Image 1 (tube, rainbow, N blue to C red):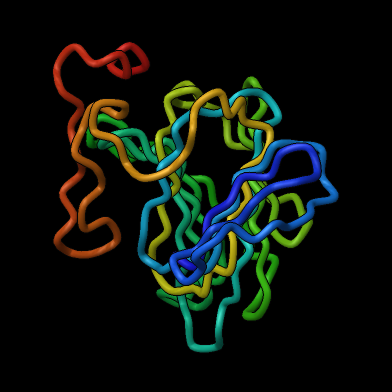
Image 2 (cartoon, rainbow, N blue to C red):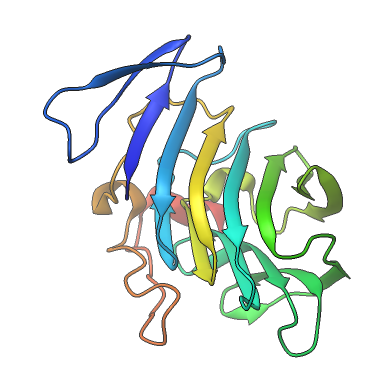
Length: 214
């Protein structure tokens, strides 16, 4: 990835592989924020804390002409807690499909008209105690009621086709450092091959604390 940083109380440091020293940057936000830049698709961004009320994720992307599908998912081990699939002519459809995949079974689909076309794209997922509020480019498209506890979310998955310029995580406790996948923390080896035909969803080891959510 191009860079990862955490914003706290106006002043942070950003470190990338190309820099020998941290570069100080300024933020206008007083809210703690974790930001990931230039994210490849497909990929998985580990989330070291699950959602709490009003926590949100903003995915800033660009959908080029010719791209037909872009998918964002909230993951917890082998479960897809929330599946948001944008279709730009895929299978002849210009819609957004939302669903979950729990214990190997897809749930009931929600389908709404895709309100945006190709170009700049901002997806916002905000957590509430009963549901996720989903909007695109500031346009509210759905409330998706929780089918698994929001606290169980372990990662954000990106699949399909899109240029993801940055992802902003705000409103999370940030009581622990966020970074790369940690097998002890998540209870499994990770989402290896996610978004490809070789993907095999991980299974949490017996007795891990995340089992209590399922």
